[in-house]
Length: 211
Image: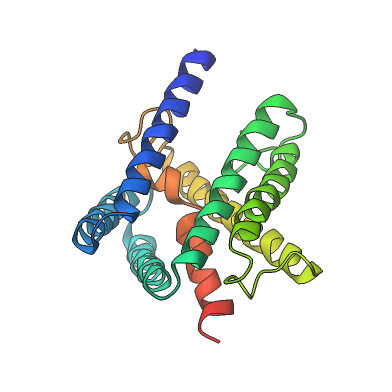
């Protein structure tokens, strides 16, 4: 069962990366259609884990989050990719370290989360972004591994991504549901997959981008 779920998760991840790469490198019309569809699905899935005032606040937050995603992509595509890579590194590190090392649980909000997973997320987010930043050293002037400020920024952004994961997990627990949806085999819903993204982009936008 565990092996079957891992295979589904792995294949789904590959498919998602291919789709995302194709969409991001296609014309603006296709990206906009993909963007709107993602937004609509996210709001629909939000209804599965919230209601009343929380649902209204959630919609407003998602709308603002998607606005920041769109803005950052249009203004600085390299930062857009950087934030995307931080989230990917965070997710992969948390999953691998959590499964391989295991150990004490982080919180009852998300029983699968472990302290080793948190450490793995922080480590892999640094590894992934180091490789990316070294590839674009001349243009990513705000991120430079020659000083410690970049390391701290990546750590903070990875923590924000993990906070997004825990927040969605908290609302799933309140609603007594395992996943926000069933659209992605092995992963669950779309919100299960982009929970880190919808938190890291508005955070970066408000703290660093609009200064």
